[in-house]
Length: 88
Image (cartoon, rainbow, N blue to C red; front, top):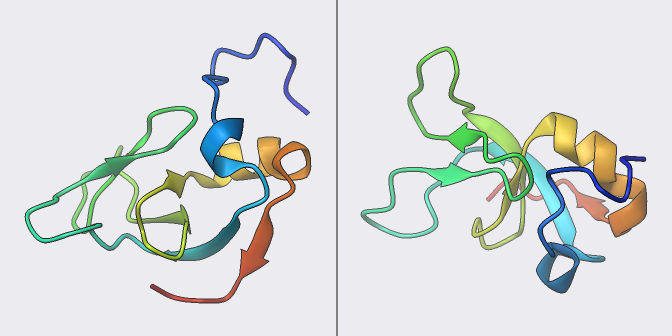
């Protein structure tokens, strides 16, 4: 578990505590939306990507919140996420 002063902590418990997240290819939240960022570390998600941009990750059912694999592993127990198999 990350330390209490981990730089990635920014009050995410207000909107990500005990939510369902599913692993999926990046899908924009709405038309005209071309990218998102990990809710913790800020890693960039896009449909087509360069080597430093993610094309898959954990997302809420509405594709509004995204979490990269590393942050998911680091915070999953603390945030009590339910993992779903839903694919956007």
